Image (cartoon, rainbow, N blue to C red; front, side):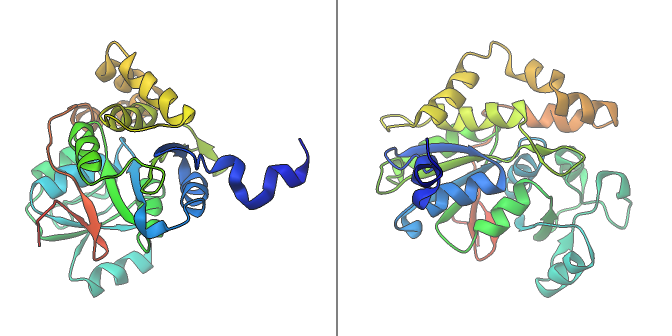
Length: 264
């Protein structure tokens, strides 16, 4: 296949004939959304099971509005201050003065805050970059059924109102994308909950990974990312992440922050 055929308008990677599409990482999100003629009519579902979108799910279920941000640096401090929000710190940097972090288990224990900036280089970066166009939803194993049902109820899943489900993945030490099993399963859970829609082969493969997995909780706990978190002493975060179907909240990015439907 020639170079011209590969690159012409990105058509070969847009999965544009289908109502539900699946890709990996920030570049995958960009490519899918660029392939939508009317981006405002599209919905992007970000899936980062360990742990950004799981943390979002836990926080918004408690009534917190969550602002995604790509990096945890000095710019994040200013970003949080401008929005009157608390800034989540790294898991190991938590303290009584800064009890909020990317850890879903820690968020459950932390004092309530109405606004939280939650940085992460994977799921949060994708959500923050995509927030300017279309609808953005945070999906995970906890809320996959609710998210899938809501998407269909809102009329998404058609070629003119497509859903781009993006598994955030992790990073290798050189910064390149590492596809992560937990995100494939989370994305597949969302896709499999969408009934009566036409899904791309890529989306069908992700859905099949979820529906054919005999023990999702064990798979997530024993996959590379799960072993990493458990090895660092954060087994509680893995346990929260595999609470499949436990949340009916649908976190939608509105005004720069994720909140549950109807939440101000």
